[in-house]
Image (cartoon, rainbow, N blue to C red; front, side, top):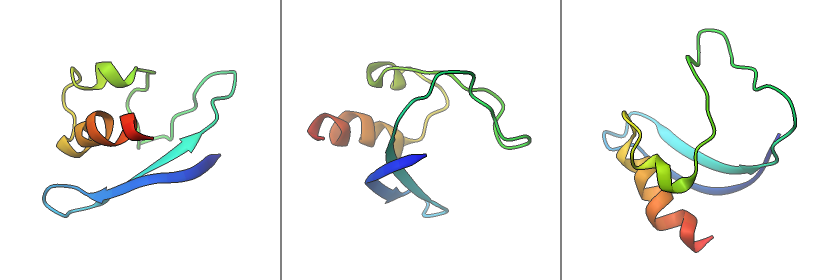
Length: 69
């Protein structure tokens, strides 16, 4: 279940709005929504910059916003 809302922004072409929330991780496997997600993994904030593809707005969150929370 999502916790508190931490940040939100529009993507670069304003095609959609990104929302960032806190959440508690539970034990067990992650269940992906059929047809919505092709893969899932846990990464640290430092490793996000090396992922491809990644939205510029994701990088803004991990580089500028998250360290201030």
